[in-house]
Image 1 (spheres, rainbow over the protein chains, first blue to last red):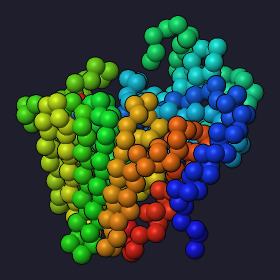
Image 2: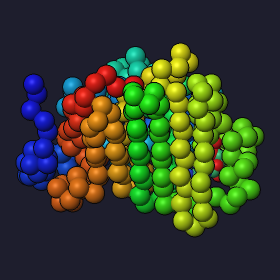
Image 3: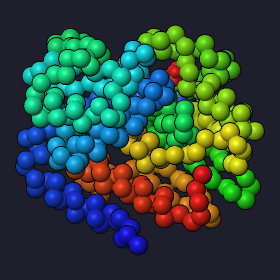
Image 4: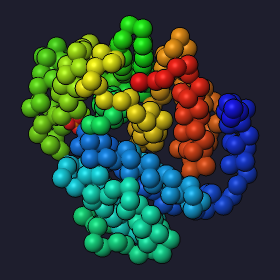
Length: 128
Length: 183
Ligand SMILES: Nc1ncnc2c1ncn2[C@@H]1O[C@H](COP(=O)(O)OP(=O)(O)OP(=O)(O)O)[C@@H](O)[C@H]1O
Ligand SMILES: [Mg+2]
């Protein structure tokens, strides 16, 4: 039987996180997943899950955010990657099996995966 | 949608889009009564009686990004297909309550599916919101109250990359610990 997680355990984790300076440095990346009806029906929740698993297994401290419908229903699941000082890149039809390559190339190597891109926004454009 | 938990994510998302600061989700998985009841309650902007009447029509939406709303009509169809239905009670300025009832052992009933990831989809939303989730099954209840978690976290966000996996595992363990085979 696994030990049931307790709020005490969460408090310990909180203290670790507060002490850990490296997380604060690395969190300049946010991955945004569209969660409107079309997104969910196309599998956006599973894509989000794959993103969280990939980040966890590679110990990458990026933020993950969900937003409502972005309005490109045929391109769902839609995933945006936002990094400090770089244009925000929107990827379309991102399914779970594409996530490892996306994280590897965009986050680790710093290369945009052009063939999957459906839009780009510079930071001074109005957000999607 | 393949899982009811995807519809649930969609319902909770509607609450967030309506500006809710508090969401309540009750799932009653009653094997004896052979019913599965899903109730989502929010304190968002609510709907007028005309809107309530119109929302289960797939051509109604107040969104501007697309001209049809799909979420509620899809869930209504899924519930009716398995001997149940969908009811909406809403008060402008106060909030909305959506209840879906399904016959549990109906052959067309989709599995509940992955509730832990569904809740993460809400907890990671750009709209920060408190969530109370109660899941009854086999005479037991699992309750999650994000206000409690946030208090324990003392300013560290639930969405923090190192906290996020803990929260998901916490929900999964809580649900796995309930009696009997869940829906
Ligand atoms: N919880 C709620 N509070 C207030 N208004 C709501 C709520 N749920 C639905 N609505 C209203 O009903 C409309 C239809 O909802 P529905 O979920 O069917 O479609 P939608 O959210 O517009 O689009 P989508 O297809 O992405 O779900 C919404 O546009 C909104 O105006
Ligand atoms: Mg909706």
